[in-house]
Image (cartoon, rainbow, N blue to C red; front, side, top):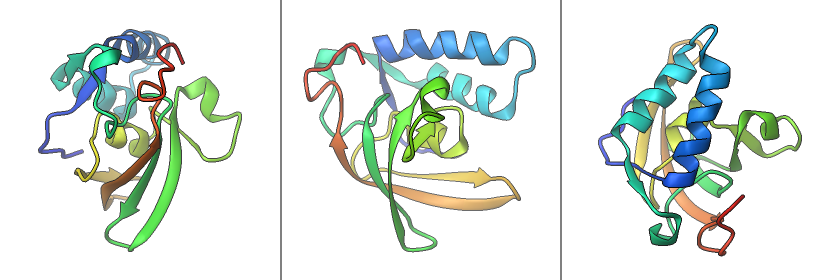
Amino acid sequence: MHTPHTVAVTELDLERLQRVLDLHGSDAPSEHTEALEWKLSKARVTSPEAVPPGLVTMNSTVLFEDEGRGEFQQVTLSYPKDSRSAPGRVSVLAPVGVALLGLSLGQRVELEVPGGRRRRLRVVAVPYQPEAAGHFHL
């Protein structure tokens, strides 16, 4: 995964994501858990109250464009246990989930998906972000 931008995560998201990594990565680390660990190690940590409204945080709904295909998709970035329960949710451990976490409105990221293909995604909108809505404990 390649992202030239500094990404940011909230203190609460970081704490919860560390628990996800402990749970999912302790027995058999995968490339997805390793990618998330790497991203979190490089991220700027901020308080939930200081998050800009266009930042993709956990439980945010994000509209992104797959620039190679010219297709738009809207997903809610979810913890692994929540991603199975409803359509339109993507796990933070999925390649797209790891890629979108911490990006801001207008930022792009390149990622490799299964099969060796590369995708270039651009954040178009963040219609719902828990912190912007005052929902600090989702």
